[in-house]
Length: 499
Image (cartoon, rainbow, N blue to C red; front, side, top):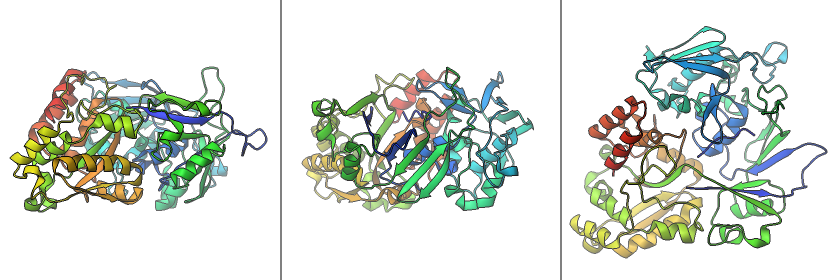
């Protein structure tokens, strides 16, 4: 499988020996996606559940390795103009779409530069309504379309409206995958379940809610360092068991090959308090730990036009700050996640980014400070403060209950509303929630990717600013950072400012 650096700590549990479902010499990798997969169209690859399978079906111009380096993919090389505005990509000539009956003789046709003109413009097409629309804001426009062209089959040119050093990293996102126009237009909305790409696997079977099977693409163009054609696997099989306990049992019996992350249902069974594998599983399970550029956060809707300002205490910055000071992130990590993760005490951008955030002042647990802020806001000891609803999904109820309990100690009453994964994501994207538990996984290793969540031109649903935070001064600083060829130091100031 191609590695997608959904980049604070990722845990992967692998069964050391799993004899079940190994038919003959076939090598099948099996995992469960408890949240389900709503689409296989890369234009809608907005979260990890979709990105993982889409990454096996499609390719883009460039890709990242597991060290976060941007490497060639369908583009074998590229040139950037001196002013940083013009990117010229030179394409490989041996990349073909998956075989399909709609192609001549049922064979996959060669990818040409015009396919990228179509694919990237599809992302900004209002008729498609891709959630990745915002990533093309940096690209210049010709009327309603992107300023890009294909002077010949092997050359693709795209022009930016301002220099953006992280642009090639942005192009590694699955939104930028190449798709065949004739197939997309034939299936229309049903392309979601009839994907045709260039990736190492192609779709074989999808019984929604039950099983998805991807088969090896024997014509795949990439090879490893020894010249062996990829992929190594014959197939990927994905099930959709929603219950985490059942998923864990399937893993222990060898019917699944890996689990990603740690769930409250089984964390103490499989992990020690320090986050190590329990000794009784050492002969059956491999535990792999790796850095993971992911920030879990609490989001406050700040759009005054959507709510009654007089009756929404969250619009008062002092209340939001009291919530931040009112719960202990260190205890949360220690007792609810077995020390898998880093307490977010240094702001929104996680450790590991190439920007200096070690001196950024975040929020450290201080119940006295929280009480003082409540008093200053006119709610001493929480008296008169309306109950606040925090919306989350089932996977994070334990964290939210911890926050609920600790905030009650300072006088803030929290009601927890649990929504299903799909409904929750829809409400967040469409600004329907006043207070929610969110998560942001780095699309590319730049602090700017996190800072983009607070840029006013990225308001959801057309961008990742789900809280509708707006500040002219912040926007100005953000634009200044984008102009820098090496924005590390400038990123520090804007990260500190947002606090």
